[in-house]
Amino acid sequence: MKVCDLISKIEGTLLTREGGGNEIKCGCVCDLLSWVMAKGEEGCAWVTVQTHMNVIAVASLHDMACVICPEGMKPDSTTLAKADEEGIAVISSPMTAYRICSIMRDAGIVPER
Image 1: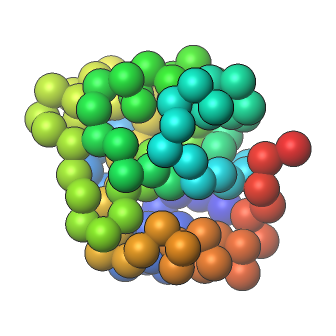
Image 2: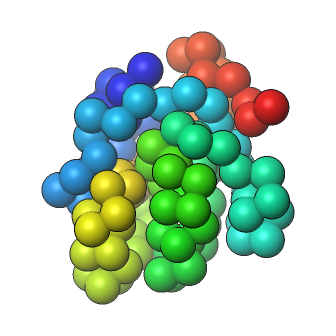
C-alpha cells in the first residue's frame, strides 16, 4: 500500500511535500524512540505522538515510509522541512493511535517482524 492510499483511510493530511508515493511494508506504534531505533524497519508506517526532530532522524535511519501523528498532532515547520529533505512522509490524523492501527491492520499492513 502507498502512503497516499493510507492517508484517505485514516482521514489524514499529508504535512510534507514528499513521501506520498512511499510504499508501506509494515507498521508500528511506539513513543519510545530507542525502541524504534532498535526494532524499526524499512518501509514502516510509524504511529507516534512524538513530534520533534529526533522522530525524523529515527525514521530516516530505517528509511521508513511515513510517520503518523494521531489526534491532530503536528510537528513544527523545521521538523517538517527535515522530513521533506529525508523523503519521509509525515501525516496528521484526527483519529486515535489505536484507531489508526486498527485501520492499518484491516488494510493488510502487518506489524514489524
